[in-house]
Length: 331
Ligand SMILES: [Fe+2]
Image (cartoon, rainbow, N blue to C red; front, side):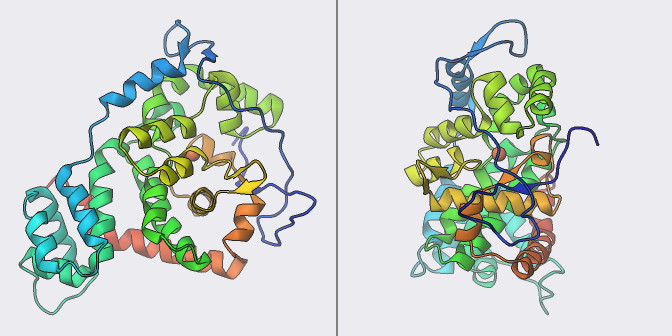
């Protein structure tokens, strides 16, 4: 395929990861744009600013109240399965999907689970919390985004895989808030949903810029549009009132080192994104031009064996969750 590269490691003189991924160079990085930067040409012929794009953010649906309540309760071990089940029961669609998952062949239970409380008890608090969050964002992330060459469902699969990868990396690297890492992974590319149409209008110029300057997609995105999907994603996270460290992780998931300092959550999200791209989950236009930051890589304490094991577990986890996400329409 023309103009594409596999994910790669950025090397610096002081940090030389020994991974199989380490074989490339340090790219030049353009300065972050200001919000007043003008877009040369948007979807039509009118110049568009980042502020214009952000007006669309307010049209995104709010996260469902019941689901948010479940997420909060499931994060507290002292809250019983029965209490969580009572809240879940207020959302019939989520209830049906959870029961389908609990009764799927993956779990191979000797007898059917018939109540939400039993399903919560069997799946566990953390699983239920992750599925509640994923259920709340599935619709927003499921559409096709032609500007990024993402078919319907591609971004969703990539986001979900990235969420599980981020959670694994958090546990592996000793980051204390693995739940937070799951959310960061899930939402890292949500900005693509909003600026997809602008990217589509400018995609040929972005690709030309990538070829001419041998840079990543996000660098070209920033140069041509004047802003990028990570920045817009951070604004969406703010709109949803997510905590500031999540806003930061989403905003910085392509450049987790700022002012010489690694933002740990952004670093985990960045590496999780890289693992999904290596595994071939949700490759779009930008996924083929992605640089893995060595500082984040080192912080995640990875080696080839660990990467292989994580990718295998990732594929297994996605397969395991299939009945839950595939059954939404039927629910
Ligand atoms: Fe991204």
